[in-house]
Image 1 (cartoon, rainbow, N blue to C red):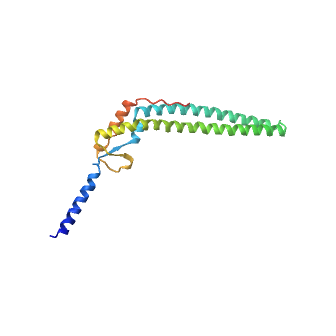
Image 2: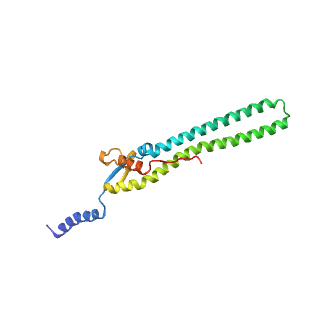
Image 3: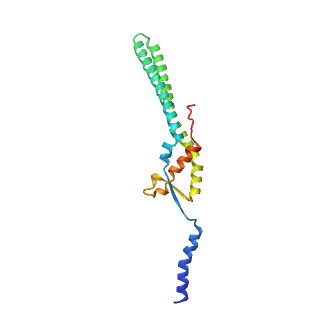
Length: 178
């Protein structure tokens, strides 16, 4: 064998070893965020509170709907006995009320979505240090969301461990409409 050939063989084998020495060993874990967001004690509590708030909002909207319909019926009944100018002023006033009502109604419905997003965000904020702790404890360097993984070994899934820790660290979550 020639020196060039030996040098080439050493080059092929030593370069990959040098490159690999720069990379940390990789251990992959899997977490089911959807399960945590639906089964965590704080998430369940938040969901119950949001449902109660949604029912209150629905009741308020129903009452307002009835009031708007009643006012519309009164306006229609008064059309035949009112002067055209007076009726036109009442109609414009009614249309302004309807526009204001629709805006308020939309705001109330958006508020429900905001409460859901805020409670999920609060849980995710509390979850981050727990994920870091569990990953470090188990030597995990890469953590993947279960929904993006087609197949994994059961022992790679740290969802149950994280859920237990989250329930201990964050057993409650207060949701407020204000």
